[in-house]
Image 1: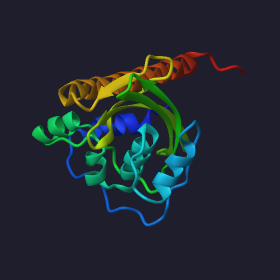
Image 2: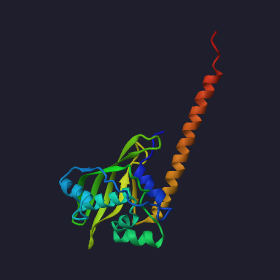
Image 3: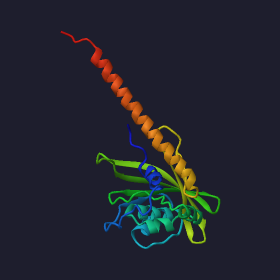
Image 4: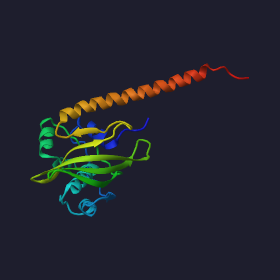
Length: 208
């Protein structure tokens, strides 16, 4: 069974934890970007902490996630997301990973104060193999700059993207439960299929 989307499922699981990050790694991530804000996004992540636009905001957020800087990641959330998650003592950032790399892609503006930013996240899976996943981050312009409000990504291949609103942690909890149950159901179905296939083979007569 193909593994589900790493960063999205990580965000869902992280809802049940607080302080799940680790100290920031000393090595710099390999960050690349495409689109009109590419140069600024890379400069922001690898040098000063500037938040000039949607791409830069997502780059800051993802670097904070990658390095385990939960405090910085929380600051990059929208004001409503910070308020909601704090009131429920929730943490929406996935566990840190010093082996992860990310890229910032296309920025699509939705009106003057909202935008969607595409990205990729590459990390090692449970088998030690590199896996790259795509995500689209929903960001909003506030008084402090552009902030992350949610994310959309494909959890199960061939199905519509799962949309997570960091401003509605209760809904994220419901989706967390659904994802867990769906993963369990698919694993059980796959195992049952393998057992049935093995049983059929064992019943075939032995040729002499």
